[in-house]
Amino acid sequence: MMELVRGSVPLRVRVRVLVLVLVTAAGLSQAQVKTPILDMSSILPSLSRPANHSSIFYSVMFDAGSTGTRIHVYTFIYRDSVALPVLDNEMFYSAKPGLSAYADSPGEAGHAVRALLKVAKKTVPRLEWGRTPVCLRATAGLRLLAADKAQALLDQVQHVFDESPFLVPDDSVGIMNGTNEGILAWVSVNFLAGQLKPQTNKTVGILDLGGGSTQITFLPKLRKTIESVPVADYIARLDIFNTTIQLYTHSYLGHGLMAARLATLGALGAEGLEWQVFKSPCLPKKFRDEWSFGGLRYRVSGDPDGHAGYKLCYQEVLKVVKGSLHQPLELDGGNAFYAFSYYFDRAVDAGLIDGAHGGMLEVRDFRRRAKEVCNKMSKYRYPPISAFLCMDLTYITCLLKDGFGFKESAVLQLTKKVNNVESSWALGATLDRFQNLRIR
Image 1 (cartoon, helix red, strand yellow):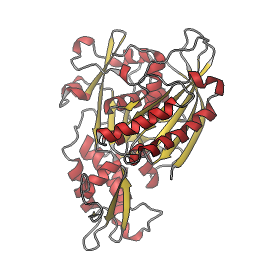
Image 2 (tube, helix red, strand yellow):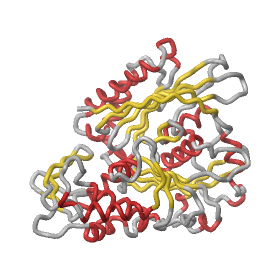
Image 3 (cartoon, one colour):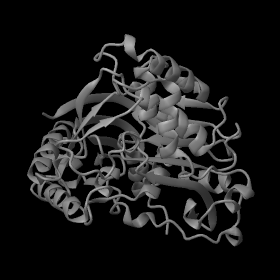
Image 4 (cartoon, one colour):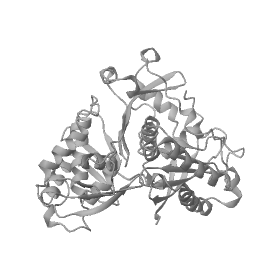
């Protein structure tokens, strides 16, 4: 059964000139750049400005993640021929499960997207449907699927779009690679946080923890950060009006929270799921249940004859994390980071932050709460406390410390929304197309 979560918050935020920001924030010349330039032109089709520069116009963006599909309906205003648009409103809905759960029944994926399109129809005036572009980009959930199954799901979405009354640009449906996902989320968050301003280099980094993958993106202040990357694709170049900026960015497929659960349980790629039971010291001893991810069901349990707790759980999780992620420089307090998606959700579940407003946490706060939850699992009843909370908090702690290399004293801004707009790559992608930036 599809679960819908609604969020509609009016917003009036001026879109600043992104080009000026990137120019002033760069600090590196073109002559210093040796890595391939990120080509954003293939992410989304170009969107043209309306002929009437005082008109309202709309954009519909689908974010198809591994655990859910989200629709963002943005309302923009153009006031004259030279001013940049004003983001006036965002209507947001999410539906569970993600498209990958329909891998063996792609027709159901079409029904899920069709249901979400009703949100766009209610938000966008009927007379505007024909010129309102609709696009969908899938992320780690479909990246993890076999190519033929992923394509069957995309074909269903394309069919739904084609029969809709909205404008369907060329290449309106596809899978976004992890690098683009991280960069566009960085653009979104910095824009909404008010950090994209001329004459400033106070941009914020982003940490995005999805179900299937995790991303880290920030603007390095030190050249040695760029020079120390293991391979060139950890650095993305954006060349705009003869100015180049370089972002440290990487997406780790298989290191999202749900994929990490599979790896910790030893269930990643396992066969014989109908008879195997995957045990872990990260789960309560008496816990036994079924858990679904990516369209597959797993039988999981604690170890009734063994031990449980934080120390043993951390040892198991460390096997998943250790040595599999690059530890960039400049994570010692020189850059502020916003963390969202499952970082935010699990911090709320653990009572570390308020679900309505988010908050600031040190990495050690995750560790302390993970210890408390893991070492007192026998006292909890499930639900309302998730049986996976010990495993998830331990993984987040391990990912931040042993994966990325954050110090325990590092401060993160946990957020779901920035200035009342969802933290997502979707806005960054839309802004990029509306600005007609020359990004090769």
